[in-house]
Length: 628
Image (cartoon, rainbow, N blue to C red; front, side, top):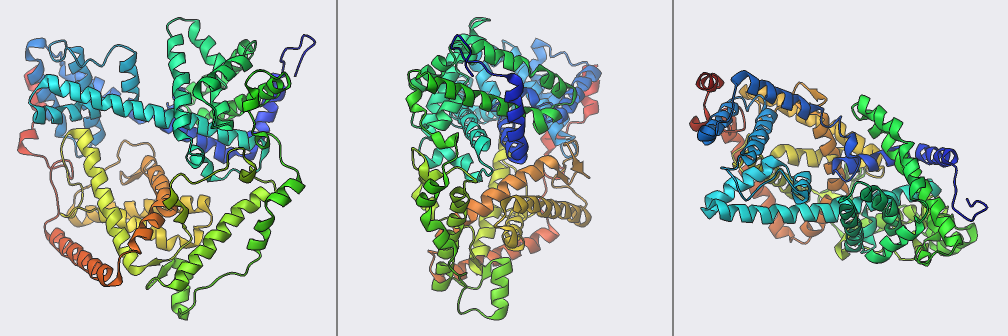
């Protein structure tokens, strides 16, 4: 690691061999970590070819439409031509919703290329523009803008308000999510170098350490200096290579100050910038392969493999820097992130774990045979009781000790030996025990909570996409039962898989996909109409389900089972029995009445089943005739 001149040296071949071995041990975890970074656009932006396939098809359709209609957007008739073109494409919204959204984006972009339509709120030049465009979609901005104009009554006022809103949103997403997640993923990769197991709780690493804001400031300052380096051609690669260790430094020591982290990285990379640049050049073949495979090879192999290599590089540079006692390396004090603790230290630290695990299994008293069967396999009890609360506490303790057992045996990072002890940032999260039973009344309220959430989510989503408030459900009330049914099915039918998160996630995808497909098929047969259509989405099945939607279901299922449902149930349990029972019955009665009404007169209209307002019914042929 050190040559005769005392300089840091390493073998790229050996480094990559070690990285491949670590990657092989944690293939799924590393791929998921990098895939999530790609989804939130935190890094690996060159790998989004696969995700952009559908968008490319839409863009090609738009270009073909422009060529066919010969639309030139003449300045004098600009506003009228925009409106006609927009209305024409609304006519096919029911069959190609994504095409309409893409056309909206194109029209919006065109509008900001025209000086007469906007002289202040430009979105085509400047670094700030690139940062905002990177975070927020044009179609969302245009719809927010159109709504604010209606309330403000002034284009100039609306422009200022929208600019302030999107700047704040962009800053928050960039500073608190995307930048910090890079450091989170580096923590996952560093633990994977040494330990066989990496708990999913590592995704909440900075939250548990109460250092999320500190991490965001460190990563934000790093990005700021990299942007300054972009002022020259040579400046950016020099600054980037000099600060490349910052995510690893904050991942090792979340307590380090922003300036300290940047200075330490710069000192550690002194004389090593060219080495890491050559390491980057050695990956060009993988980037080229990713281009020809539409990003598939990057997602499934190259991205996590490359991060594994950089993680090995950090470990080697760190060891060399500490041996040379470079100023600031005393802050790199998490030794057990790089070396396993000896068995004696682990035994002494985790002496209480084995004792707790040896306690007999606790069972709920006062339940009949059938009720016990339902409670065990479906997680449902008639009412909550003192025995039920004791059962949950016992399960929570045992689950905690099982997690610590992995640490006690040296299979995962020993959190009790961390320089900064892990602690829950939000006290109420300490009572989230997902291995619990739910009462019937609690399930009813959870059904309505998630049905209401689904309704509100789709209302908000389509408001952003189209600038209109659209009730997307078959029913007339403020709920989408498919969300509630999906949530209950996950809670009840998948109860036996709850102790195994990975299997539970896969089963959630299968279950939710089946529910959505069957619901879509049934609605089409009953009403001869479609309330959703995924035609054109990547890996869709008859337009009723698609891979993108199933992935969202998987993420939502994890959040629902392991966080939201237990947290909401804690509050539901506080409702007195004389109140919760009439409340549940009343809600069910209202829903039943809505179902009866909707079976005769279902909710239809703009943006739902292909029926649009009269003002929007402008045929494409009319537009073509007017433009020829």
